[in-house]
Image (tube, rainbow, N blue to C red):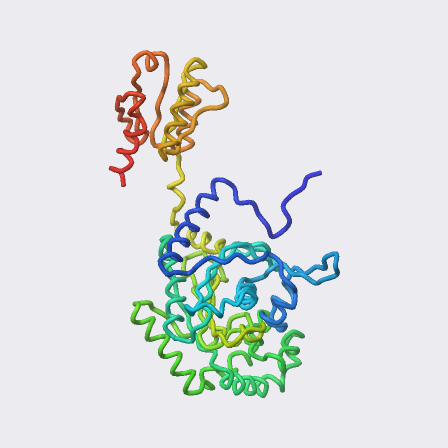
Length: 426
């Protein structure tokens, strides 16, 4: 029986994992600089959390969740996104009682959605996200957006576009909702069944419909920007002002609504403009969710956050031809000429590793020529050959593979010499 990975899942093989590790390292460093502390939540939650938090009119809840009953007949769901779980933990663990607000949290881990697999969009995917809960200061909105942009810049991406919109406060959204109902209702039978259901529950979701996106009423739908009250307009202007202070370029798109029900005020997406990226160019998205904490049983605690797909980040790197993960290459390959020198080679490898230098050797009994080819395939920076003459003299040649240059040193000097060469290269 030929068992394969389930559709929509994949294996991260060793030649790719180095890229993942470098992305994670850069993310961790940025979170340290911005002071976002990691939180780890369960991979599955009670289904009600996502129905209430994400919204029962969203595609995620209606079509994409992996939901099952456990042996106690409780309905559980593999998490399709991170915010609801983080907010649930914030409420359950009473983080709103901490003296320092907002509470700044980050997460990194697998999410699950049942949708058609395509490049950079799988059924199991990895998200990095942050949440700042407990502040309604427009400056924190700009900080959250800034951190998202810095993640992409830190790995070398340049073809980026930040798109903003304001979804307004409750008053603005109620006025816009009524206008949308009046706009779509006379011809709602021309829309898909999902949109017909959304008309009275959440007509804003109609604007995000993938089935009816080309319907003529979409072009003439009332814009939310026309229904923003003065408070919402002022808030959005302040967010834009802070972004300008940070030197972050942006484009305002009044049609940006995001796919989750909990958003209000600031909403944003970061797109890739890289050639060949495909039709779906969104790399990350997020926004403000004042009211979500209260919906999940907590006190008034306004929040904002974003989530980004690591798979889509790696796809963008591929499209822009940016290479990362090179720091994982082998530094020293130690060649044993025969069995009589293998133990010494093994000892040298151990000593190099003890000094923080990546080292490897042959474990397949190959001849000198085959071992040199292996060192080349592993992209070793240096090669050391140990034979009878080296054992007798107590000295070896450290060969730099890129230039062919060699340096004679004693066995005791190997690690120190490699470290010196590394520091000169840096």
